[in-house]
Image (cartoon, rainbow, N blue to C red):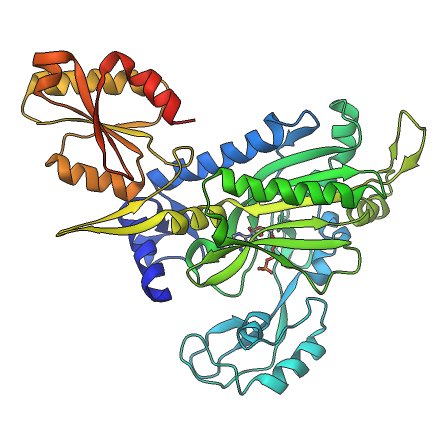
Length: 461
Ligand code: ATP
């Protein structure tokens, strides 16, 4: 399937079935912002639950945090975002589409360095710009490159008209909230190095390119874990985290052949090592998650700018040091897009065609759908409703009595529901059994109503 075709189908399915809606659609949309519909929010919640369980619940030395979106503006000076969080932008003179120059160059196998000054990137782009085509109109007529800061600004707490001189930023990443709470967590949570702080929350970036659906949005949710370790022990922890993060995706049901590691060749000066886990999106292998060894840069910077002591006293050895950090960082909707692309399948059985999202039961927005065979038979409807009421005490379950059963199966296939339960006349007249139909194999078996909870508990781990 062609790239555009697969993405178009996925975008169409996401809208049609209530996973993802373009923001403010009734006003003509709002670039690079999306809303999650009824099934999208379930999928995102399942991703967040799996991440939180994997990080916080299953590790005795990782604790959670929910820091505010707004922070003291000095945070972003200390972190280097005010001076250095900028992407290179050029505009097509023909159609006025703005593009990220490092990405345009990447497409022709020329690699820009993140640290390049505006002058340096202009020179590199100048040498190559005849070969670079505008992704919108295909022409090669470009403006000069300007570096554009990605931080989103606000007037929070500033009641003057020239607040842009002194802006408060919406956070560009969640981890800064973790660094500035390092001391608070250390003093309150009885943790000892090595330990981690995990956080899920919104981040905002003035992204230049507003293509690729929910892959890159201006408002997004990050899941970040910062692991504080003794200097000299970071690489050992780093290797463990790399292995654990890889396994996380396999446990979610993502196909291993669609994942690969990408090593950063041009490291920022403080980083010791940086790898990304990439996913094979329809538009190619792209970053899903970053796993980075960041040295003591973050805590040292905040200690310097806040003039607070952010060192750690080892209670066993009495050594004092600034911990080094191993970071894992990923976007919720980026995993969501990877999960949808990975699960998407079209299947032909003779004349019959179906679209199916083969989510693992853990990720599936709806785990079970319950149907009465016919809508106009009150005894079937009542029985099915009773089963629905019972099952939804434990799982996210849907009741559906619309149209014929075949159509109801197709609808559930398209949202990735692993099991459908149908109540028919045999249920009532004969043996109190129902038909359980499995999404992938489409196999049907009869199961006694009283055994359903045990059966699904086994299936939906
Ligand atoms: P890029 O260079 O592609 O703009 P980055 O490498 O600076 O991004 P990070 O700051 O490392 O990105 O972000 C960590 C993670 O957060 C990414 O791996 C991705 O999953 C997620 N993420 C970053 N930016 C966005 C965005 N605009 N939309 C959705 N998710 C994002």
